[in-house]
Image (cartoon, one colour):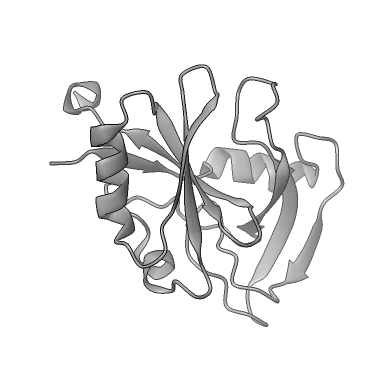
Amino acid sequence: MNKFKIVPLSKTYAQKIKETMTDDFGHQLIETVANGQGPCRVSLRPFVKGVDKRILLTHSPFNINNAYYQPGPVFINSEKVEEYNDVHRFPPEIKADKIAFPITLIGYSKEQQMVSTKLVGDADIDELIGEIFDNQPGVEYLHARNAQACCFICKIERFNEADSQ
């Protein structure tokens, strides 16, 4: 049974950023060749260092401007990419590389208050997400963040079969 849904940045949002080369905070953006793996926050695939072109922008994954608003740096692919669509499992390329992508799961309430944090470490992230949603009813959604750089990777929502019909 599906317990969660991965929510990447949308293609529509990325297209707006690429067309204006300005983020939601008014910063002029720069395109560079990848010197790190990322990942792209639309496709949720790692960048190929020295090959892929990427755009760095400031993004906040929140809709309430409060203490947890946390705008920060994220990358999107300069080329047109498809949104990550295997939404009922964590992106396998990120999951498989625990060295390049150490992950922290941060849980937030409906009021956008931080209520839970969990370092994934050697755990299976898909199982851990399910356990958090099963055992912590106050967690409305999670953010996956890089545990070292603290940057936002993606949002993870509770999945309710009734919502998909």
